[in-house]
Length: 533
View 1 (cartoon, rainbow, N blue to C red):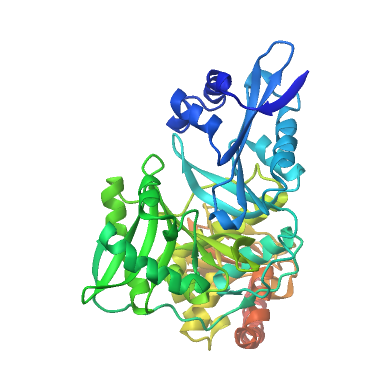
View 2 (cartoon, rainbow, N blue to C red):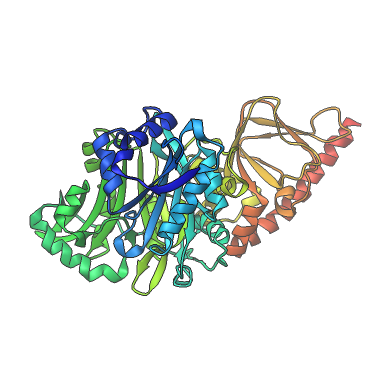
């Protein structure tokens, strides 16, 4: 018989054995150190459970709930560290541990989060089976032997969603992830897309230094003045006190102007994970905000002895200017968590954003359909970012997009994905209904139609294929085969339809140009077929 109970001091060695059996020696060192494990067992800020075989007395599995992932008033917990010894799997222990975790904390919290490793799909299946839904995808989130990506899932308790503040204001780049997350949480999407949000200005000249006890009191006064306008959220806050902040390996970069403290940004560093998190930003004026965020790289590099591999930040879904500023500084949206942070009598939605040094290479085939859809939304933005200037330049020269100004072209380029093809590989085939258009960034593509022995045309860099299929959701009328190595920007029917719904001004140009371009293309095909016969 298996019973699930609270872990005790006598379980420490068994916990260590389970972690070693499940993760090898690549897991975080605290899970192998007996003194650290003992602290976990007796921590007041977490619930640690074990599954025990009452006949043999053997501890076969463990699971925990961390009650300190948000600010204390946020009532947020993370369900983590679910591990079952390999010799005891397929006996339902994971489900038993999950049920007991929920039972012990559901009256103490309003929001539960789960970060599941893609290498351990059983944890993801258990989470989804117990009501957790995907709200984000965290690429390269965790460093074990190498960096791994994780799914972020959420579940809500008591009246958390009833307390949610309505109508967040988000920038267009956040919208796809926000829409998917809200639908997964069974919330009617009510976000307002702010197309006109301007970033915070570059600002002036400030003296920057790390926080000391001397700067704590004036900074606390800034914090109290802005407590009603929080734009950044995190697990610790300034009013915890400087000594607690230091004990949590947290610090502030402060900005002075003529000797007076005018702003500060708080951050934590995980040296083992080579990652950093921004958890708070306070300022007396707008000019200092971008300066603080821009100048974080140097203290992060000094503390990690290398550039940070991941920098994450949770930003208010009601602060489009902050979202736009972070986007311009290289941060991209990876999750949208409804009702995550508590503010007076309402719960606020939060956008989680990541900055990575390079686009992540991730295979999402093992994920469930909802998780895969969320992951692809996030990865699309990272893949597109590095080729965005090329896409925008090509868009500006294409007849289909004639008349679009720089801002409109950038918005169109921002919803493109990317793809590559080797010689002989088909971009699409006649009759297929994949409803996508390819903008050729590099290479050469041969176009053929049934009944023709030779290609009827060649498409090269800067030209596009599949316009009618894109806009009319119709099957392709021709086959496109790569003649050389080909790279394309891909625009899907669902993405262009949503963009045109939000920006009808872009749609007017596209539909007008499509009518003109389709007529010209049909003339060329007719002429080619006539010569062939």
